[in-house]
Image 1 (cartoon, rainbow, N blue to C red):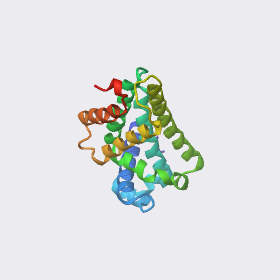
Image 2: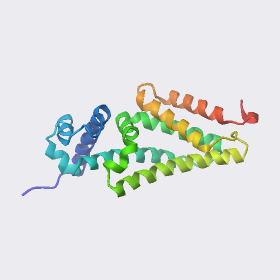
Image 3: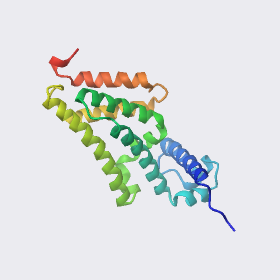
Image 4: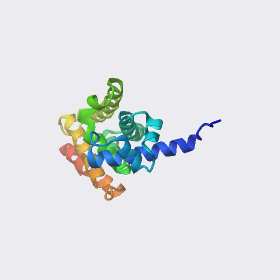
Length: 200
């Protein structure tokens, strides 16, 4: 009679598979990676990958969910405050979270334009919704800063893309993207947005 796998062991196995898949997706692309490749990288047979996730697309979706939920958990823990402080904390969080699991973040950026091809419509919609939550909150903070005279009048979308650029740098240079580097990224972006009368 078979017994259920302990919850902790299952979570450990799933993490091993996701980490192996993220490493391979980053190195050779999602389309060029097979379930067998993932099993070999995780030192499991390919049937185990199917057992835990059901398909390669489900693994990709889990990597996306993992990466985005990590970002959103950090963002949503930032308390309301003045726009300069809030934007600084969002930039710091973006850099540090991006560098925490660089392979997962790399897959997010590499495959994001092909989501509707790789994933089901429901899965892709879930990912896009998470992306919108980040962009909407960040743009809203910039808009409030402009209205209050804290930031110079710029397209809020530009500020969002600057933060995305900092996160891109962080996963590419994860060994250098520590707390000090996150502070420097925040200073560079926020100081560039400050209105003339608020610049130090």
